[in-house]
Length: 163
Image (cartoon, rainbow, N blue to C red; front, side, top):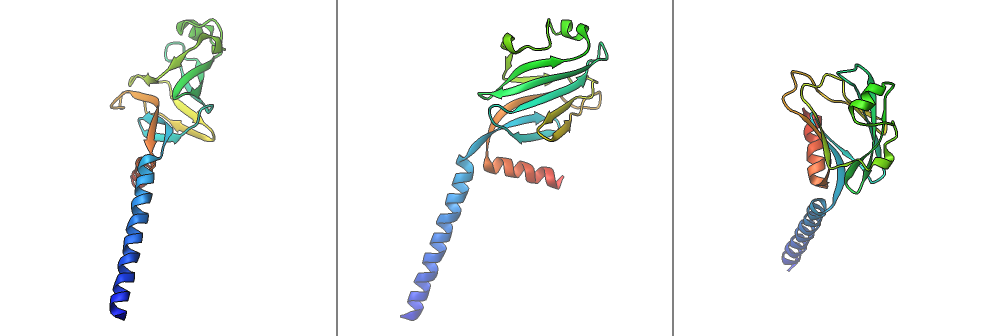
């Protein structure tokens, strides 16, 4: 009788362990959150509505520094300002002012051409991400807001750590 009880107790423990592991796995698949996804090198940065980031680069035609400030709103990228000392750069972009809040410039994503040579950097919170551009870059760089689940995020972080 004691052996039967022990076996039953052991079976119950295994069953509860399987239930708990299944719940953890399922919650990791169901829980999703927004990330700023940068395609090259692939980066996933958790973000919230209201977070801001800066896209810094040197304009290739006018050789002038440019800082584009974006805010994340409803899963989209809203351009707030284009800071540059060059009036020519603003005119190139069709702007008459560095502050573009009233222009409603909202994007699902934006792309940096592969041949762009302007030392592109994304600054978000305390992080700077150098974007690989130039002739050696195999593809365009895409930036967008995506929703991913916890497991996908953890696997991506693990693979980035191992590479």
